[in-house]
Image (cartoon, rainbow, N blue to C red; front, side, top):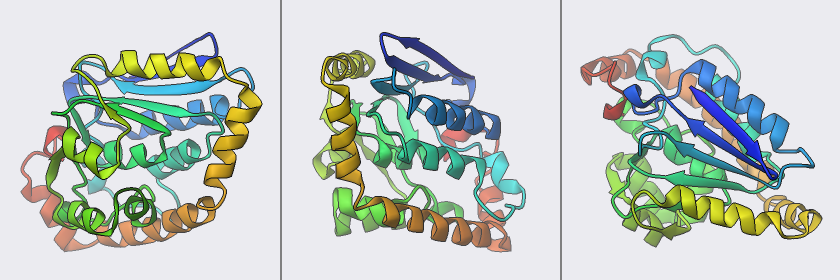
Length: 249
């Protein structure tokens, strides 16, 4: 369900689970983590493109995974996010359809994000009785500002690509069905640049925030597990009545 291709120094990763709106399972997180660990520091890799199959990015985590007790330490999803955040090569996301939960928070760790005006984003953690993840308790405010970060994280409402672009979460709005083409265009441009300069520039841009991001990860892991274990949260998850339908997240 995670497919990859590597050509001319560009790794393309496709989230391919269209019958579940490309919702991410534990096994899929592990595959993503492994790919980012391998290619994110590989000398022959100039960039990584991440996209979803069937005109949909990802509906986030499969809610069924939230019905089990969270063990101490990083979940499979957080392990993937840490690997993504440590990539030394640029990461480019092509986002269409929906980007929900981790599908939205992972974008904070991408260097370029291309989407459409009508793509739907959502950070539904509070609505599910959970707490934010993905480093969003630190990063989101720095990317989109204090007011917008609180709006999106606390209300858990949907917002479209136009709003995401205006707030600064995404790089550019492009036509429907062309986000992957735009991502490939950018990847090809980057591949022609001096790679040591590309990696050094990315490192310099991130070295001030990285300690804060991983501190946020650590705190979010603790709080998320605590919220997940509560009866109120489990009731909220069950009350959705759509545990098997990831599009509801």
